Image 1 (cartoon, one colour):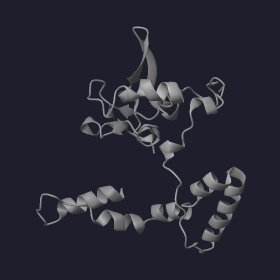
Image 2 (cartoon, rainbow, N blue to C red):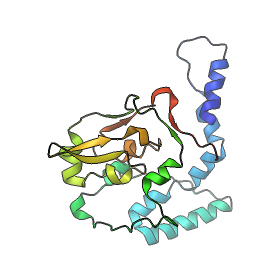
Image 3 (cartoon, rainbow, N blue to C red):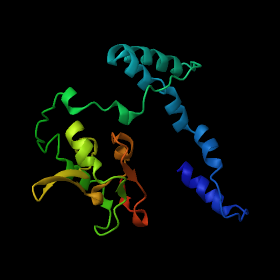
Image 4 (cartoon, one colour):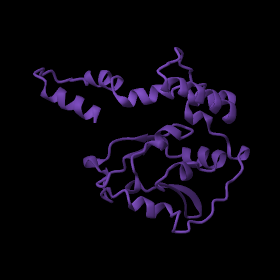
Length: 206
């Protein structure tokens, strides 16, 4: 909403320069409740990475408790590495056997996806672009066991067999625009761009 308001203000501006910038957006974001919430938890992830779940959660809990009293610690801890670089090879991970959905408390992914009321034309250009088409099969599959099949909550990415050889299938019409793939892909090979006509989830009941 803040970005939309900044864009609207820029369009209303009397400045007719062709390169308008959303200069009001950074200031309005920093003044918003969203920035306050993000600022309060800025040190949580670096602490978890450095001290582990138990100790990191304890220290972060104390900091957030102080924040609720109006005390802001003056430092911001840096992240040791980007999120995609934290992905471990499949050989270092233990596979998780998830129980099948019971359709009472848990549901399959595609049934849950239908609730997002996605409005994508099935014949629109793919808005999930690969920088190198070979990377999913030459890097992601042998090293990480194709993590895009698991980190995507909408089942967009599938490894299928094409003439007996594995290939990546991108079901872009399922995309809910969370941009997880853009952030988490280990080779940073996936480029998310806005889809045709502003398509995507329509959250009418939110």
